[in-house]
Length: 392
Length: 92
Image (cartoon, rainbow over all chains, first blue to last red; front, side):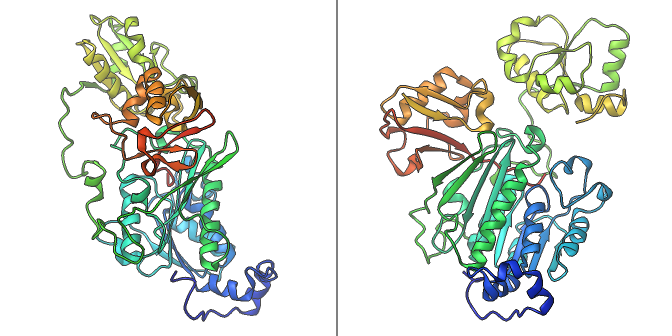
């Protein structure tokens, strides 16, 4: 591995020797290991849930060069888990806020800013200067992009991902180990797997998973221990259960040879079936008519004869709701169609309008003719009609 | 009866059950029992041709069944089948 071989030139000054003394007295690290850490260049893709805790510990541990790639802004909903940012940082660029924290943790770290989205055009150029990439992104196109760039450049990719109470960690793209495509050859189609924004995540989980990634990164740099290569670790916080599964390198990809199918970076949005922002969305079979929250308010005020259906989950209904709405969670809608009358006018809402759009599709397929989706959901209701309704 | 471990993202289709047990001589038979009871799960595991999808891995104990006999892999009562879908969350 690039980071564990070659001459190490990074000498430590007296302040650094004092700072890292708890490392230096361990024979597995020692002065030589600490110099390897100082010489190492690690790129954290994303300064969010996973990137925040792992960057903090990598900086504290003395990783000499830490690149951060992020172009997002700190939002109040990030603070439940992204402890590199604080309340005072809301509205700041994440990269600025993260740099402040990291510089305070360890001023000896050379921080490199990549305030961009990783793309097929810039990925190779950015990643080539690093020894190890730590993937803390949140979408399939970037996951496959990071993987393919690491395969092409021969850089280890310390992978972590999270969902609700569950995390996955593994080390990919080493000389002899598997890559992400060996683990999952294809991404799921868009919409099949909910994101953290839709599915939620226990705030502590990315801390645990990010620190497992940081641990693997430090082990790779030091060349010690048994790295998580060829093994997928699944952590379940509810059961407090760590399980390990074998991940094999694609037999068609012999160590020391170029990958048989990854030859260059491709269009990952297309690969993952995500429509380009610049393109019009693919026409759906039967577009669902929408009404705005203001129109809904007017209909309610006029006491029009229609049925308002809320397709969110029970626990979301407890956060906030429209009293006129009948709660039928989307997953239970097919079984509960008999509670609705196809002759009625049905108006469906959810949190943001996505699930209610799906519900309208279910209703139309079941023969309901007069179905409307509330554009923007209860979030828009809070913004435009009644600010006393909390947003979540 | 082999145990099937259901991952968090797919528990919405199994009435939130985390493990279920089905009789079956092969992984395919056990999964058929599972998708027979919870129909919503089927499209997440199999494509229209009935082939396992490429973004969901099925493990018999700690081994990916792609490297065993796929859905024909024999199962005994002490085995655990684990479904592991790809998840991408991490940044936001």
